[in-house]
Length: 293
Image (cartoon, rainbow, N blue to C red; front, side, top):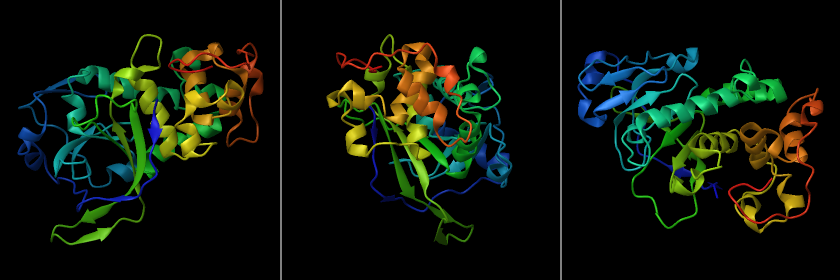
């Protein structure tokens, strides 16, 4: 089960970008031995990494590295700015539960699912089912400052695979003065992910996609209700837009027709409900599993 947390948290003075590659490579101890970029290129630890320009967020030009102090217990580290907009904790690339390549692949799959230019046949989803929402969601990953962290002190007995929380952000200038940022940032935290990477699940990619939907405010039910998915009857569960969109995008016609319509009809004046033809029409309750449908 995945959880969305709504508590508002403050962090220590925050995001400061390196102005030169020299500054970035000087923080080599903060990055793992091998990093794989979103384009599949392996970067050795001693090879310079491309520094993010000061306006990379404005220009939406990721696949670069920037200093950040947003991650729990990490202080200032060198973080990876994904081409789709997520700012990634370097611990995610050194996590023993998955390889760096698997993590990058998961982000790539999640980004395709919400890319308006990628069809379902090529690994997309919302580009077909709801292109208006896809365009908005793609923009929100940048504008809402989606951040992904992978702390290693997660509770191994918890059923929570990951969660999302809006956090207060502070920016620090060269003189050490901090100021509150204009907006919150959305922190996606990978926790006891094992339960969501079993055979037949949507895996790490589905988890990241799911929590990104939370961060973008796509919820259609209260958080407490969403977090008790397995206690809800099927007829109520299928109206949960976050679970429904995840099911539609990762399981296709195995998802329920109402779940498909939840995804196709959100934030659009021209819902493509015809694409939901042939989806499951089972409305009676089903045994708990990774994902009811």
